[in-house]
Structure formats: C-alpha cells, structure tokens
Amino acid sequence: MKRKVSKKLFSEARVFLPGGVDSPVRAFKAVGGSPPFIQRGAGPRLYDEDGNVFLDYVCSWGALILGHAHPWVVAAVQDAASRGTSFGAPTALETELARHINQAMPSLEMLRFVNSGTEATMSALRVARAFTGRELVLKFAGGYHGHSDGLLAKAGSGSLTLGLPVCPGVPLAYARTTLVAPYNDLAAVERLFHKYSAKIAAVIIEPVAANMGVVPPRPGFLKGLRQLTRKAGALLIFDEVITGFRVAYGGAQALYEMVPDITCLGKVIGGGLPVGAYGGRRDIMSLVAPMGPVYQAGTLSGNPLSMTAGIQTLKMLEEPMPYQALEERGALLAEGLSRAARKAKVPLQVSRVGSLLTPFFSEQPVTDYASARRADTRRYAAFFQGMLSKGIYLPPSQFEAFFISLAHRDEDIERTVKAAEEVLKGAA
Ligand code: KE4
Image 1 (spheres, rainbow, N blue to C red):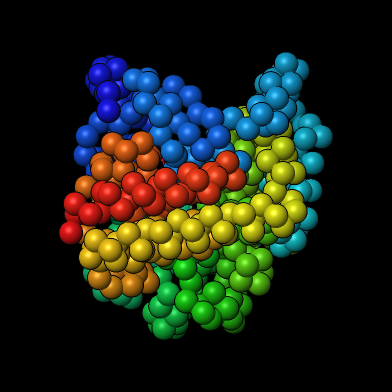
Image 2: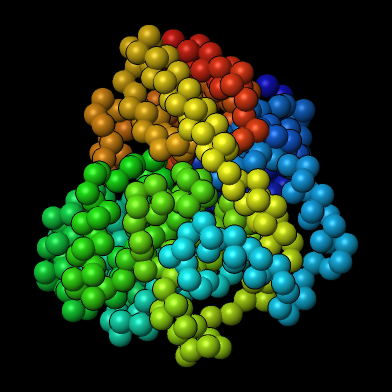
C-alpha cells in the first residue's frame, strides 16, 4: 500500500495541528502507523492521497448512514449553498428538520440545534440543572458525551465518591459534580442515588454504549434507570448522538420503548455536516433562552447547509426498508467475523446492535468498561493494520464502533469477511 504522500502530509500537518489532526482518534495512536490522508469519499469508499481505495467502516463516526457524497444530499447542499451558507437569522429549514425529528422521536417536544454533540450534551446538562435546581450528574464509566469539562470525569477512588478529572485542564470542582457508575450495573446506580439522591440533577447515558466499543444495555437496565430517576426527581438524558436514527428511525428510545426527559442528537441528523441538537419535554426546554433564563447560543446553529443535509438524509430513512437492510448487513458482518475468528481459533466477542458493532479481542463477553478494557488492544491493532493493507478501513481503536452505511452492499461485506479470514488466519 503506497503511503508516501499521506506521510508527507501528516508531517506537514503536525507543524500546525496538535498531533497533526483535529480530533485525537484520527492520529492512529491506538493502532500505530500514520493515517491515510483522505482526498474524497463515494458511497462506502474512501480514496486517499496516495491513490489507495478503502471500504470505510468509520463513515465519519456514524454520520454518513447513506454513505459518502450521496448525490441527493450533495445536490441539495450545493443548491442551498448557492443561496447563502449562513444568515444568523431564522430559516424555515430549522423548523422542517425539527418536525422530522419530533415525528421520529415524539419525546423531543421542543429542541434546539447546535453544532456538535459536545454542545448538545453540555447544554442538556445545563438545562437539567436549571430545571431541578440540583448540581450533580451521573454518567457511566466508558460513556463518552463529548469534551465539556464536567463530562471529562472518571470514577473517584471509591465507587461512591465524586468524579476526578480525566485529564489536566479540567477543574477538580467541575469533575466533582459528576458521579460515575459501571454501565449495566443498576445496583451501583441505586447506591449512588441512595447516597446523593436529592442532589442528582440527571443521569446521562448512551442507551447503547458505543464509545467503549459497542455494549448493549442489559434487559431491564434502561427501564430501571427510568424508574430510579423518576422516583428521585432526577432527569433521564439519552445521549443518542450515535444511536439516533442509527439503531432505528426513532433511535434507541424507540428500539427499547423508552421515554427519556431530554435527548441529545448529532451525526446522522446533519447528514455529514456540523450539527447537534438537544430536546425533550416542553416544560424543560421552555427554560432555554430566549423563552426562559437558561442561556445557550451559537453563531452557526441551525445553519441552512447542515439543516438541508439533515432533512435530505432523514427523508431517505423514513420508511422501514433502510433499517431492515442495515440490520441484515450488520448481521452478515458480525456472523462473518465470528466465523473467521472461530476458524482461526482467535478469541473474539462481536457485540452488535443493528448496523453498529465492535469485535472485541477477548475471551469473555463485554458488558461494561472494565470488561471492555480486558480486550487485547495489541491484537486489535494488528487486525486493524492487516485489514487496512487489504483496503478495509476500520475504526483505529478497539474502543470504537464499526458503522455500516446503506451504501455498503452484500458483496462489500463478503469482501470484508474474506479479508478478516486471511488476516486472522495469521493471528492465532
Ligand atoms: P462531537 O462533539 O464529537 O460532535 O460529539 C460528541 C459525542 C457525544 N456523544 C456521543 C455518544 C458521541 O459518540 C460523541 C462523539 N463520538 C466520537 C466517536 N466515538 C466522535 C469521533 C471523534 O471524537 O473524533
């Protein structure tokens, strides 16, 4: 695989950009080597600056559920751009996309568009604190909700202590407003509510965890959280930045028949352009300025290009067929990877919900962050590099999710499985 141009571009990028990238995972630190610099995408494929072609299972971290450069999305965005890219003033497009989201997820009675998932979750927590008059927030180990200070917190020394910063620069005071429990452990959440009940403003959760690798909720876990939060007067926030319009048209809340108080969205609703949204019960969202006193703003929030790409994308997802196709392709890939690992006698746990999946190089099933961390990251890195050399671009970390788009055909999945058989054969 030719890499000369990308390597040169990477060294040039490192002069100006920390690590040569604008988001850490892209630098390939977890898998080694230097990243291909992408020239263009089309359908399920990426084309890099050295002329290599890759079958893409990152799909802009889930945003491109239709695949790269879908002609209808590109044409609609080009048309919108010809009328101006941003006005800093209301447009009908924002209401149109909000209507699509509300029809798919009725729990979002009102919502606010922002420009990233980080902004969505950060703002959701502010509204939750304002609505309840409480300060603490409970998240789950291995859950990622963007990089706002309070959410960059890890579990303290004891399981009942306040959070600690995950990195320098996060004030201890901010991290200490965050409680951390193991995912899928309702008893741990109950203990934290027992100790801090009257102070907990909200629980924020990825209803299908995807940032420790894919970890589905155990049966009863989400319903248990709903009961606990309702009883304690805390809000339940679903971070559906990844799962929204991914695991079902109505997201994980439809799949698991849940009604959260606030939902955060991103990725798919922008069709690959910068977007985020937070929304929920009208009595909660009515606190957001200028309707209420909770301030939150954004120069490019609701901009016509992101709105247009989002509307086009959701229009193409509205009927059940796309999700049947995504489910079938997800199952085809998961079964193929498991079969390849069995043949090669390599321990592999493939964790999947629909077209979202992670192959963990582990003997044991993965149900939370602690078990995810027991996966063999060296083996994953070797698998990643072997697949990359065969033209398959996987997420460059064991603790991320594979995303399948509607542009992936069965023959693409079959080619991926064949490549995995060859790579795993040498990995036993
Ligand atoms: P952004 O601020 O990156 O748009 O969204 C933050 C976010 C919030 N909530 C969930 C569940 C998320 O997965 C994310 C961001 N996802 C990562 C992928 N694991 C984005 C990739 C990256 O950080 O470069």
